[in-house]
View 1: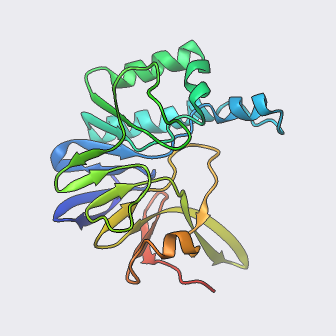
View 2 (view 1 turned 60 degrees about the vertical axis):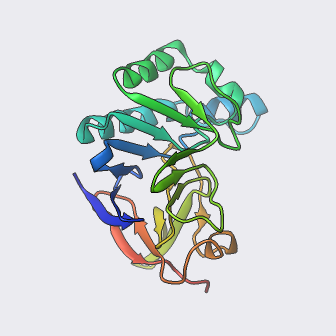
Length: 222
């Protein structure tokens, strides 16, 4: 399947065009920031409604990635639900869909800042996961190495044919990879912002998601 191959701490990894990260030798598929149930949370707050299809769209793409990769171990890197209530309020059909995806697979929910506690769905619930030589957590630690994280929803902005276009992206350097948000309706942080520039080395790459992932130098502030 389409992806960008690279190594972190000596481990061969593939950044998939969908925004998922594949560790082929370990059979691990990693996704971050699904934000399932976002449209429901927006409605509960009384904000302008979103079409209530984002959970189904996200699960469809995740199911396709699981089938294409054959991954038997799934790591969800936090903010899997838009808040702690969203997991409980998912329609029963969507809870059953998640259960079907979990069947026969090891499924790990990493805690995020939007969903800090365990949810009433199957799988294991961890604050973070050491998987030497890598470590999986929601928010990057500045001094870490061999780290896989999410949280920031990084995006790169390109000028194409006179238009400014945003693309979710992986950020990669010799210490870490920061995953894009996998979920539908998730916003993003410009990868030129200080919060990301201070985490990444100057030689970092941005891997743009899409049908054919494209690598480019991580953009510098304008």
